[in-house]
Length: 254
Image (cartoon, rainbow, N blue to C red):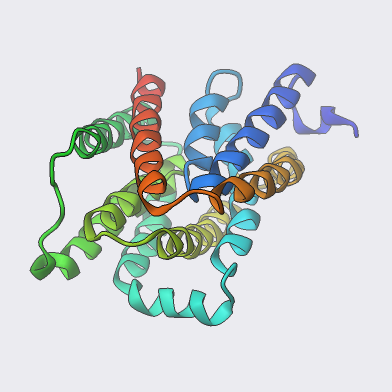
């Protein structure tokens, strides 16, 4: 493969492959954090636009299998159940993607990382921060909008969804499936938006396509671990990973 067409140095390309393999493994194990790991790591050796482009196609492909692991009927059921969150996320991704070259990414990453880290730390220490059920519909709209707003400019819209699912006490299977559905549809919209902006064209598009292979390989390995995790350990692993990814966002912003 002639990696020169990607417009990056060989070391940077293979570093991106290694990061993507690890990110895919983590996604396979707990259902999320692949874009978070990729964007925060890529920013150390890639230009911001290359970093964002690189995660888009791997995110699309890995979430197809995650969303449909229990079948298409279950995936469609999740679409119907969480339609408010989906609508808000997808609309705001399209809107915010138009400003990807204008808004400082560090500002968004900091504003996302601080509340996510605080929430997850509180959960790990046993404090109850569950959303009140009578406000569930409004919470879906609000957190979906926040996810979409950040997603269009950073490629990361998962943490608000994880916060919501932890708050309502969703079980392991539903949590992973809903993440797959929301992440897949969001990634498709993000891809479409950046085909329009020109970000996903030429070397960036080929670079993103090349990272699909390590992403899928890592995901398959991670799913074997996920199947062995019980509900309590799954929830605790999710909370711990949310803390780490939140800190990563803050570090990337700094």
